[in-house]
Image (cartoon, rainbow, N blue to C red; front, side, top):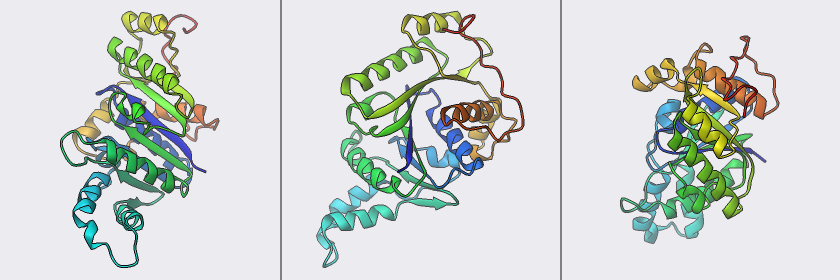
Length: 271
């Protein structure tokens, strides 16, 4: 059984960067084979990880619809589709990637999402960890793509809108009774001290962040130059924060030799 981690939040909150830094931590700590799943139709997790994506679930489904009459003798449609899907897995040392992409039509994501979920659930049995980067918003929740999750990280940027999106995601998970064992709220792109407007909104909504990830110029520069975030140095403030977070969530001792940065308090004594 794999330990499944999913990242959700509003657009622009830095979900893909956080997912990449989680994978960086798992790789550095020798956590075993990792399956990265890019469930965002606007796929860019591969670029963030330094992996080249040539095929996606959406493209395979499109091709399958056109070529299904040419299924080899002795193969069922399901077996043939599984064979084609296995060909899209991007493999690297201790890390593999599968990417959803888009289906037919500009807004046709439901069927690729369904297929991706089934495919990812099957693949995940062969990995110690699965890390899923979801699309912005809550559609993946309503379509139940994000299911059977051990740790759901709900990401907010340093804004009131981001915090409100966190609350809506949290409420939707409860309403839909999704199979999510634990949820953690992360404030990304955080300054040294949270703005009082953000603080007040967190308190009003009864949200206590598990961690904050500081705004990090190194992450920005790596993204700008299309350099893999896996290669970030340990001196990166964001990488350090995510390492501390993951060590806490997984009840492990962080392997880094530096002392953790203190998290900025929301209020004296916390929320």
